[in-house]
Image (cartoon, rainbow, N blue to C red; front, side, top):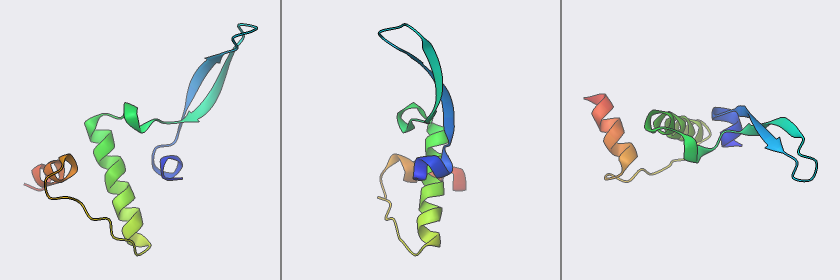
Length: 74
């Protein structure tokens, strides 16, 4: 649900192994293919969404997200 809400869909080509026909379908973006900036934005969106519905996501002090957030706030 969060990938759908914050990342969206991209077209991807699939090949039928039997017929060889190529079909393009929309698929959810993969988090493993996000660059650092996109991953930071995605994580921030999730944290803000969770906060808006009363959930608190605890962020470790020494993690990549915290380091990026601190660097951006300086």
